[in-house]
Length: 126
Length: 106
Length: 136
Image (tube, rainbow over the protein chains, first blue to last red):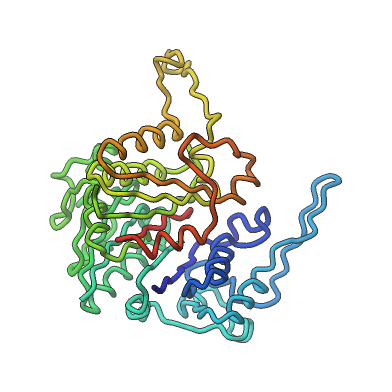
């Protein structure tokens, strides 16, 4: 059984969670030997760029020591064998250049999403 | 041919993304799949035939359903909605799942 | 007992989004048919079953707490579990344990248990269909 995780919601609770809960979920599933891949669409395409550098939060004496590193988590996903796609048009619309992307990120057009879906038993849109 | 059951709970005034979600429905249908788009919550605000949006009218190959509860909650009468959109109960979602359709909440 | 099993992942916390109401309507419709239903509560959705939810009066409506009969999601879950049993099915509810801990909602109503994403994957492999209802 194969599941495609489509991430569209981005930078929603990352500083609190210190990750993106969907990317984290996909990595946990992979660790449990699930066959999962990821599509980043809409604002979530920005997750695919390298050198994201969320500043650590600081409230009074409280200091964050582990701010989110979405690029690191996504690179981990790629290194573990997950296919990670970005939707071309969403990348282009946001003025993101290909050179900013993590190594191993794959591109797909909006139009080709339909045929990509065919390859999966489950499509979870987050 | 695969069967896709898409659920949309937002409308084009909430987010431009919704028009792109409609396009996913259209592309799936164009690829030869049987596609249903179930509109629930504020998605039904786009179903009035007098609404200034035409995204739904372009989905000729997609079966369009509007949730009866959401329509009633917003005071939208079945006579007000686009021809081609059927009023449906929440059972439509359960039917699709029981029939093993591919489910996507857009 | 029905041989149909439907699995859901819910992500929104109570009293925030219409998706919560819609999710429960879908679950109730499945249970009415005697289907087995699995729910994995992720992130804010772990508060749906929090046992300390308390109803309140509504002074704008001029109602006491009893008159207002304010909906509580923990009561919806309990009622649906009972209904599922009466219909010959089962509502199985797992809260993401880490999500529970970080929110401090450790006291869930009876019938709801702790688990992890792998439980949802297991359900997904065994179900007729799976629907993820994410926070937008």
